[in-house]
Length: 157
Ligand SMILES: COc1nc(N)nc2c1ncn2[C@H]1C[C@H](O)[C@@H](COP(=O)(O)OP(=O)(O)OP(=O)(O)O)O1
Image 1 (tube, rainbow, N blue to C red):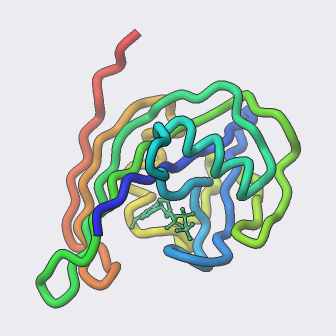
Image 2: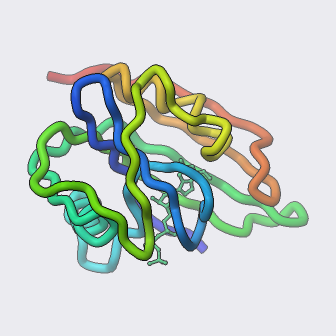
């Protein structure tokens, strides 16, 4: 399976909003808001839809912060590949609320719960929260991180 997905981090000053995922891939872990891009959607449209569905908030300004590839292998075979566009937003409408998919929680940027997140997050999220852009490729075996490479992207404009 190859899928195009999104991740969004709402920012308020020195705080970032994470969700505790209640179902699906990454259930029980904190992550950004997001999910799969549906046919006919752009990643931007998809991430706005996911924010509305998961936490009842509509981002009104998105800043693209990079592309991540997550490869998962099972018994030496590729089980799934996830291409994930990452965004942050400092402007949104609505107050984050819990849904059947996600429970939102604010964290200080210096106090992100990396021990309750995907293993890759600590390798690239600090860069994104520092206002930069990243490309990363992460290879997992049975969803355990084995190899990775992370590049800082040049800032344009
Ligand atoms: C494996 O490494 C990952 N790390 C992080 N931080 N986030 C990841 C990783 N792999 C996937 N993700 C993100 C990307 C998406 O935001 C979600 C997966 O989306 P999901 O499968 O839950 O998609 P939905 O469209 O919400 O789900 P349904 O198919 O159930 O509607 O995880």
